[in-house]
Image 1 (tube, rainbow, N blue to C red):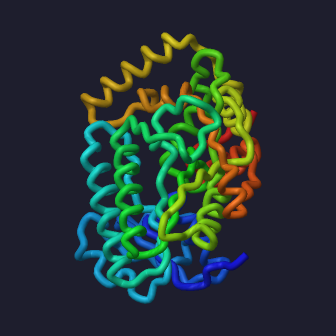
Image 2 (cartoon, rainbow, N blue to C red):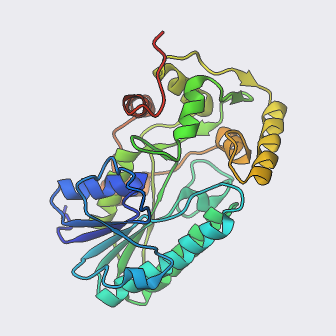
Length: 336
C-alpha cells in the first residue's frame, strides 16, 4: 500500500483530531504545516513540533499562499461549540471557512484533500449499525454545517479541483481534549448519572485510532467522486459501561442511575440557565442526547478499502485519557 509522501497542510492542527493527525504525519516523515485560530499560546499536546500559522478560515486574505508547495490538505478546522448563542459562529466557520479553504487548495493546485466531517450528519439514525449510505438527518447547526460542507466538497471534487475523500469520525476522545474534559470530569466525579437503563449502545473512538484512519484515507481513499467513511473504535459498549469505566479509572464509585424523567428535567433546567447566562451548563440537552442516543457505526468499508484497523478499545482508551488528564492536572484522580 502506497503512502502519500508530500507536504501536508492540516487545518485546525491545534484541536484534538487535527493535532494528532499532524503529529502522526510528521512522525512518518511528511513535511507538515498546521493552522490555528488561537493566539493565546495554548499548548498543542500532540503536535508541539509542527509549525502553526495563525489564520481565520472565514477571511480569505489570511489564507493567501497557505497552500503553496502543499500536495495535500487535511481539513479539520471547525467550530463544534454547543454554547447558547453560538449557532451563527458554528455555521459561518464550518461553511464559509470550508469553502475558503477548498478554494485556496484549488488555486494552489493541491492534489488531494481530506474533509473531516462527522457522524452527526445522520441526526438520530433509524437502524443500527449505521452505514455511510444512511440518509442525512442533521439535528443541529453543527450537523447542518457538516452536511453543507460535504455537498460543497463533492462538487469541488467532481469539478476536478482536486481528488478527495470524506471521513466521518464518531465521538472522539483522548489526551489533550478540552471539549470532552467537562464530560470526563463529571463522569469521573460520579456526578454524571446513568439515565434510564443505561443500555443505550455507545460507539466512540480513541483519537490515535481516528488519526490513523484519516492518514489511511489520505493515502488510499482520494478520488474525483469522493467516498465517505466512518471512523470509530473497535468495540461497541453502552453508556452505562462508558460512564462506569471513566469513574473507575478515576478511582471513584460507579455513577448512580436516575429515571428518564429526572434526566429530562435536569436537561431542561440546564438548557434554560445556559440561555440566560450565555454559558453552557454541564447537564443540558446535548449531555442528555449523549447519554440516550443509540450509536453503532459500521466501519467495514473503511476496513476494506482503507485498511483501517482501530486498536484501542474503550477501557484502554478511557484509562489513557483519564491518566493524561490527571497527569496534567486537568482533574484529579481519587487517592482512595
